[in-house]
Image (tube, rainbow, N blue to C red; front, side, top):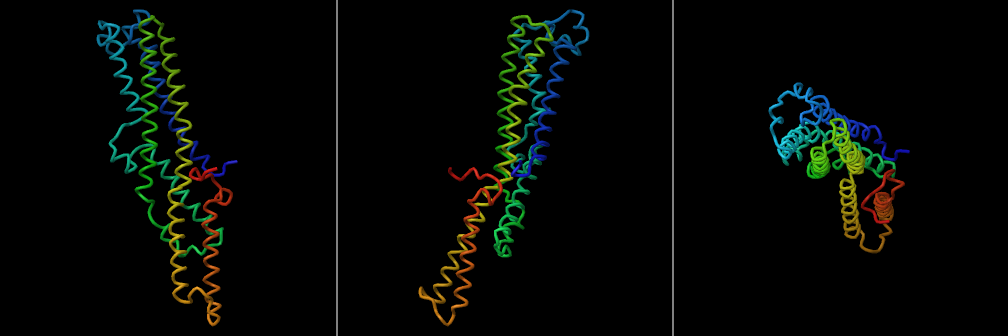
Length: 276
C-alpha cells in the first residue's frame, strides 16, 4: 500500500537517476575496454584510442590523474549537472521537476484532508490557492541537489581508489571496468534510490505547509476567543445564546481540524515531525 500515492512519481525520479548512472557505466566501459585508454590491455587496442598520445607516454600517476579528470567531467555532465546555488533554489535543475510535482500534490491532498475533516475551508483558501511557497520548496530543492552532489563526490572518491589499484596491480581492461562500474552501482545507484524516495515523500508531506495551516487555525481560534469574550463576556448571555453556541461550535470544529493535523491516520501519510 502506498499511503502517499506517490509511487509513480518516486519511480519516475529513480528511473531518471538510474538512466544517468547507467550511461556513466557505459562511458567507463567504452574508455577502459573498447579504447583501453589506460593501456591496460594489448598494444593493438592503443590504435583505437581517440587520442593515444594523451596517455601513451604518461606515468602511472599521470594516467590516473588524467583519467580521473575525464571521469569527473562525465559525472558532472551526465549525472549531477552542477549549477549555481541560485539556480538550484529557483528549481533550475533536473531533480526539481519531481520535487515540485510532489510538493504540489501534497498541498492539494492536505486541503482535501481538511475538507474531509468537516472544516469550512473558504476561510483557508488563501493557504491552498497561493503559488507554492518559494522559501519552503527552495529548501527541498537544495536538500535534494546537495544529496545527489554528496553521492557523486563519494562515488568519485571510491572510483579513484579502484582506478589506482587497477593501474598499480595491472588489472586487465575488463576487470578494471567491472571494478569501477561496481562503485557506480554500489554508491551511485544504490544511494540515489533512497534519495529519490525520501525527498519525494518529504516534498509530498509538505509538513511546513501543514504547520502553516495549523498556525493560522490557532490564530483564528484565538481571534474567535477574543471576539466572543468581547461580545458576551465570560458568562454566556442568554439573550444571545444561539450566537454564542454557534461560535463555540465553530471553535470545536477548528480544534478537531488542528487535532487531525497531528493524526497520521487522518492525514493518510506519516509526519516526520511528530514524536513517537
